[in-house]
Amino acid sequence: MSIPILNIKNLSVDFKQGTRVTKAVRNVSIDLYKGETLALVGESGSGKSVTAHSILKLLPFSASHPNGEIIFDGENLLQLDDSKIRKIRGNRIGMIFQEPMSSLNPLHTIEKQIKEVLFVHQGLRHKQAKERVVELLEMVEIQNAKKRLGAFPHELSGGQRQRVMIAMALANNPEILIADEPTTALDVTVQSQVLKLLGQIQQEFKMTIILITHDLGIVSNIANRVSVMTQGQIIETGKIESVFGKPKHSYTKKLLESEPGGKPVPVSISEKKLVKTKNLKVWFPIQKGILKRTVDNVKAVDGVSLQIRKGQCLGIVGESGSGKTTLGLALLKIIKSEGEIEFGDISINNINHKQLTPLRKSMQIVFQDPFGSLSPRMTVEQIVSEGLEIHNINNEKDHKKQIIKALKEVDLDPDLRHRYPHEFSGGQRQRIAIARALVLKPSFLVLDEPTSSLDRTVQSQVLDLLRNLQTKYNLTYLFISHDLKIIQALCHEIIVMKNGIAIEAGPSEKIFKQPKNPYTKSLLEAAF
View (cartoon, rainbow, N blue to C red):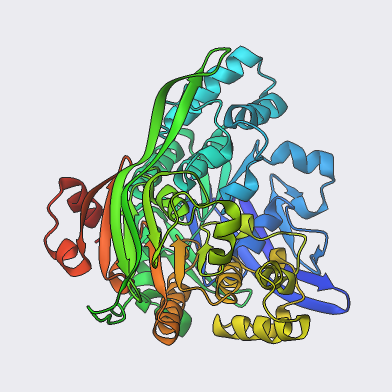
C-alpha cells in the first residue's frame, strides 16, 4: 500500500449539553488507501457514523473535537472554513446517508434535488443536468427513470429513496464515497444489485469507499479491510479474511456470532381473528394534461385479502416498491383504500375520522425511518406522551409514570427522556418509536422494517423484546421486512408481495421449506 488518500489521526468527538459531556469517539485512527473499500462495523451507538460525519464536518453545533486531525490532500479538514469544506462536500467526498426520508427535501422533486448537486459543483445547464439526472437514476436502477423525475420523496418506497441518495452521492464522481448503511432500506435481491453496482462504479472511477454497516455478510462480500468499533474506540483492524477468520477481540467474536434466532410465540388456534381484509385495493391515479385527467393507475395494492388472529404475527415480504408499506398504512386507515377492512368486530371501511379516533390507540405503527417519524423539536418525553394527551388517557402525573414504564420496556434509560432524537443512535431512536406506540397499550401493531437500521446484535435484542411484549400483552403484529431471517424468527404466517399482488401466502415453515412461486424461491436464495 502507498500513501493514504485520507488519514484520521487520534480523533476524539465530544457532545456537550449544558454541563454534561458525552465522549462519543475516543482517539480513533484510520488510514484509507486509494481504490479500497474499508468497512466500519460495530453496534448502534459505537461511534461509526459520528467518525464518518466528522470527515465532512456534518456534526451539530453541540459537537467538538478535543483532539485529532483528518488529513485529505495535505489539509486538515477540521480546520477548513465553511467555503473550503463546501467545495469538498459532494464534490471530492460524497456521502450516502442512513435515513433518506430525513435527508431528502420533502418539498422538492427528486429531479430538482439531484440537479442542485450538478448546478453547484459542475455548473451544468438545465438540459445537460436533466440528461445527467436520468443517467444517474438509470445507473441506480430506478424503473422508468424519466417518468419518476417529477416524483417527491414521499411518493417513493424506502428502497427507491435510498437509490436516489446513492445517485446524488455519485453525481460528481467523488474520489471518496462514505456509504452510511447504504442498503438498510433495500430487500435482499436489490441489496446484492446495489452492492454490485457500487463495486462496478468503484472499479470504473477508481473510487475509495468507507462502508458503514451492521450487516457482516455485506462486509465480507464487498470490503477489503475492516475496522471494528465499540464505545467510541477502534478495537480491531485488518484484512477481512484475518479479522473474520481469526478475530482477536471478544467483541468481534460476539458480532460474528450474532444472527437472528428463536421461534415465533405459540398462538392458540382458538384465538379470534383480530384483523381481516377482503379484496383490499390502493390505486394511485396517474394524471396528465391541464385538466389533470386520469390516464392510468399505479396499483400499489391490488386485491389483497388477509386474516390475522389475536396474538399472531403476520410477515409481509417482497421487493422495494411491492406495496408492503402501502398495505400496512391502508390497514390502519392512514391512506384511502377500497375493499373490506375489519378490526375486531368493527368494519372500518367507511367510518369517518371522528368514529375512527377512539380505535387509533388500539392500532399503532412503528415506521421504517425513526428519525423521519420523530419530531426533532420534541424531547423523548414529549414524543412518547403525545398519544396519551391526544386520547386524554389519565392525568399529567400518571403520564410520567407511563412514559418511564414504556421506556424501561424497550430497554432505554428513563433518565434520557429529556434529550432530543438527534442525540440518540439509529437503534435507540427505533426503541423510542416502539415506546411511543406501546405507551397506548395497543392490541395491533404494524411494524414497518423496525430492525432494518439496527446492527445484528441489537436486532436480536429487539426481536427478543418484541416476542416478550407479544407474550406479555398478547399483541398482534403485522411485520413488514425484507430480512427473511428475521421474518423466520418472528412470524407465524407470511404473505409474499410483488407489484401490489399477494403471489404466495401460508404458514411460515411451509413457505421457507417448500416455496411454490419462482419469485419466493429467488428471495429465499438471496437471503440464505
